[in-house]
Length: 192
Length: 393
Image (spheres, each protein chain N blue to C red):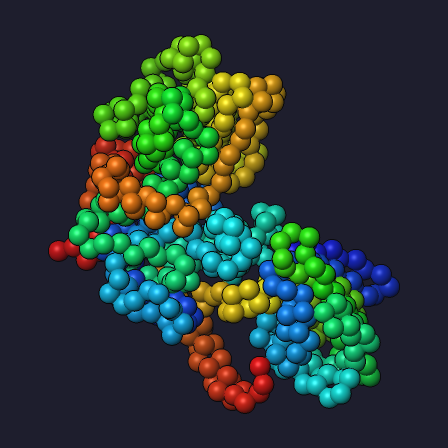
């Protein structure tokens, strides 16, 4: 987890890396299953695949953003590259590379994403989603992916008890949990 | 349920909060029979951790009975009597597989925030701020324990809580501190801080064959425990001009083979360096007061080992690093890999080699927590260790 952010000509490029203690092919295969990615990608609502194209719907503060992406390279076990096509809300291109870890038996995962945030309120929302330091959300999502790969679940304290000073937050989380459960019930049947 | 909550700087409240529930299928719920206040809880009490929120439930030393388990818990069962390690570890990641549990990469849901603040994704701890995961702590009637098959150690029913409770933190912490000293039979070791961790380190050093253990503190009753219960020679730093010279005088002029700093970031001292540290800390130019560590480095013999179980959190200065280099010292430190030591230490307790219960000075219910934090912090009322029993009559 060590991200680097650069801006060039209105395009923001974020690159980061994480080591996952699972074999290369397994890590690749889990990531390549796009419809399963919303499990780790906190703000991604859904991804549907049609041939070489996938449709992404993302919850951003201020509204939903959507785009179609096409795969520009796909080498099993090694690399996936994509770019947005058509009239995307967030114009972007990205790469995820999988290399055999030099330490231990895991996989080094390198991610580079270049994106042009939308203008206006939605742009603010997207910026907010990307965190105060851009790249924080990508690191958070990759850490969630790592947890899923290595442990099979994602650590949380959502809904745990706490004192009166945090009562409002607690109540909010209880409601979010209810909504989440309802959504999951609805999603049943979507292949993981 | 009733729980001890952080309510701000030196402000502890006992509140009625919602009962914990199983959140993930690998969780367990523990009904707490005993829980202790740790010296490191005082760092939170004194406001050294900016990631504490008002209303956070405190506590990371606890034991009790398993009252519920999630659907994916394989070995732990309802009814098991358990001691729970203070750090939270997944058991599956690269570091957990290497038995370096305190470096667990998965347990902290806020790992990225921690990495941005600290430079590394710290593992989670119970009741120790949102930087360390924000998990509700054990100074409560019930606790949710994640990774239930990894952390909790099942203990026999016929041994009292007081002999087992400290397997959760201070006994393994003192033990690892002594192990880090590369001790051999006949070794000499000096321990700064005769608080619970220092006493456990002194005891562990004896167990590992140390021939001479010297404890340094300013609290007479703590030094007395070191002398009577841990077979240590003692130095009260308030009564001597130069601790380092005093230690050398006790070790043939050469200094001990190993030194242990069981004090950490809130060290007390005397003289000009004490004034310097207090001023810099107050001005936020330095986060920690490393007085004990400086003396330890100066006292250690050439080629010796400096072991640091005392908690440091940030930046320190005026370290005699040239002395450390010149003497070729080895430094070993860090959060305890608690899980790794619990079983070995349980065996020592069951065999009668170690009975750590002698450090307990106060036995109370949860309602007494606010006063107990104050007494422990001020070292009043001979307060060496507070144990709370949430359900005691």
